[in-house]
Length: 362
Image 1 (spheres, helix red, strand yellow):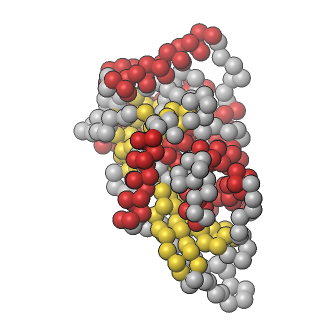
Image 2 (spheres, rainbow, N blue to C red):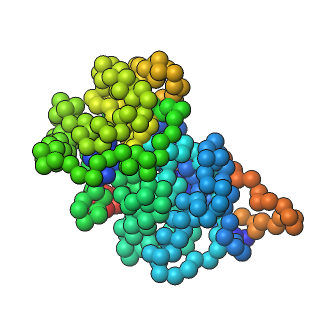
Image 3 (cartoon, one colour):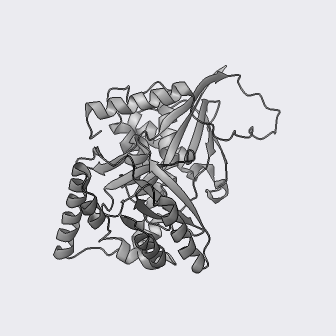
């Protein structure tokens, strides 16, 4: 019998308009989970099987997959080699979509590894989640070209996270009732390409305006000031340079704002677009965004989401018979992701509550 664990990593919105590289929000559609699932078991040698609707867009070489990159980052943080594992990745998020697809794979893998090997780095270990977060940033950098923790912090820890100068991921308040409306077009845009469009520096005036805007956004969230929140949900740094990389973006943004959205911008580096909306207006705003993209000849999918306040979590832990496959047979087909067991869901929520009670800057 071998121990098997499976962990889930959610979709994320990087930057959240005002916080280039320092704000991230984990999101969960109202109609069910949305993210990547990674299953791990100890094995005779390292292996990876990828399946799911977006597995075809992953690198053909397993060694280039971020799940295995995350295992290597985990080993480096641990300071020793791990026993070989067999990994199964269910790729539930589109690649190069601006939805934190890379982060979802990485944090699901790290959370599963941490559980499989009895929490040498995670919340139950001596260093808390700080080492897991550092490992996540290191692994995700293989996709983005640089370490930036906005997506991985939110995906790992849940909620709306602000990265402090020392690397801690501070949990910000966010109104429970507000919705994130995600418009996901049939387009791709890699983070590397989107970052290449940015200038190497900004003017002093823009630096001050950006600092004012981000600080005011944080104040609006802490005080519940909706009008100030509306005024500050803008991207002064990246969006002006990236907008032209996403066909139809300005029309989609205009449609969302005309429909009453509190704010609308690129999700991460794009091409997906998010809007923040009151619950009663979310579906209509989503339809307006879909129609705007349709008018540009681009199909899109709309997801109405709330904030995922848990982040990466264990969804299954069990013992299964060791796999015995005939010589020459390929690996067994992975199962589609299942909803968390009640026990796993309670454990994930308790771990999150414990992290928040200790320090909102995990």
